[in-house]
Length: 365
Image 1: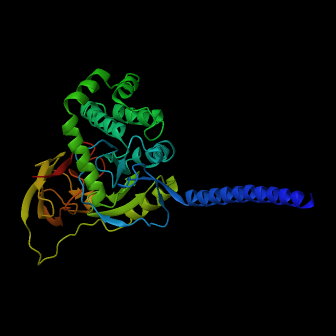
Image 2 (image 1 turned 135 degrees about the vertical axis):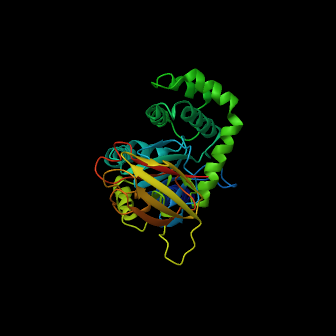
């Protein structure tokens, strides 16, 4: 009888031991998972072949300087064309970290930099989280095509509404019907026209999105949101990865503003590829549009044909002529960026002259 009692006690002790071990194992596993997640940066990373679900990128990867090997012409943009700093932003409409950036950081960027004429902000596609991502990207292309020239604010209102309605990665919302229904509530955007555009331009805009994504990858963007901040017209800039706080953007914008513009004025012995004669009077340049080749060394011979002093400056390249009196001529030389933002503005920097129309553009051609 005593032996039977002892065996029963041993069995109970074994069961209790296994139960306690299971609790401890679950607790430790949860602790490890929590630690890993707390060390993750706010960025959705492109899925690997082994795992089709995006995962956070670990911290410890420093932002870096990158070459501006992408285009911004024709992309959705907000801010003054001649703003001294440009932010290129790769995003996915299903990315929850993009939503965090849009709702927490972007409004501060808009109020403090974009609306003040200090930053030009460009959106580029990096749709990779699933079929609804691609559908949303095509819709975005269609909306910009519809209102980009006539009412760009309507696009950015639509853009914000897309993130406001987001319910997470592949969670159900975001097909064509959802998007067109939402668009009906956005002033200035025609939902029927959007629906027709999405049907008729699917492959065309998919190709454009693929190009955006490829350009992003060329500068190190592997997930969303991803940013490159650079002095407008420069050949290099600073990369930011993830839904960073506004203070991080402030810091990088300040660094970029105080950096070398990435273009070089040429010395006396350097070969000039092209010489262009420009005249300035009250209040216009002739020609007002100048075509240059990317990476081309250009000499400008600026003549004042007016009756008051004028100059010719290219602010984003940090170069230009001296202020000259009527009848005088001054020359300056610069190397056009090899890639990046075109057109590039030039103007007379004297007070009121540009506002009265004394300005023009450098274009590629």
